[in-house]
Image 1 (tube, helix red, strand yellow):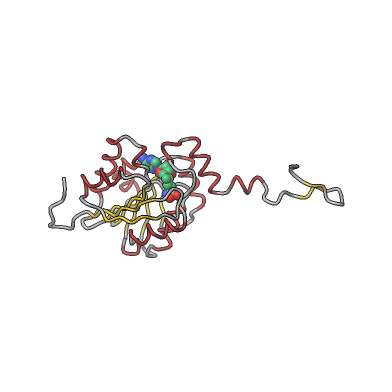
Image 2 (tube, rainbow, N blue to C red; image 1 turned 30 degrees about the vertical axis):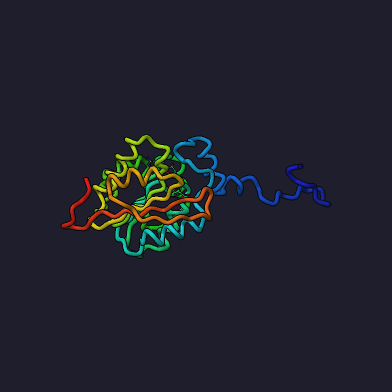
Length: 217
Ligand SMILES: C[S@@+](CC[C@H](N)C(=O)[O-])C[C@H]1O[C@@H](n2cnc3c(N)ncnc32)[C@H](O)[C@@H]1O
């Protein structure tokens, strides 16, 4: 197909969806980052609206003062969190891929959001750098089945250590690695399946015991 069709006047008619628009589409950018770093991104498309809604329902960001998101990708889940959060709450999004981190900074303009580029393993340092206290909620999109078990455990321990007592760790995953590792660190999760997503995902919610309760080691 030709890139443009001549008008009767002789001037070329612009494409229906110019290339620049296609390039700016977050789904295209997500796919590009998947092709560049398949194990790290681990999904060819961002989460669906259905998954975003289910995650938000289980995570209850409206009950949080400080929220952390691990692996915001192109920022769809970040926006879903912000829509539900209180006006005075804060969100720290930690993304390992510098291009995706930059994309979230450019696309999600909200004074409550701080985007940090780095690994979720260094969660405590990122919170300190942002001047934030203990989070009530940590939401994770990290593909635990694709990262070495030692790294997965280290992220989960970092999450448990920084969460305030009674706080929650919510993760959405196609495989059950996060459930297996998370059980060792937090105890049993509650979970729900969302089939209206590519691929279908299970959402797990773990809780850190409140003050006075015996925390799992
Ligand atoms: C499956 S995508 C989820 C993206 C987005 N939250 C969504 O639902 O569409 C996983 C994201 O986690 C990021 N990621 C992977 N390992 C990470 C790590 N150790 N620390 C921070 N982000 C990481 C990837 O770069 C990617 O953006």
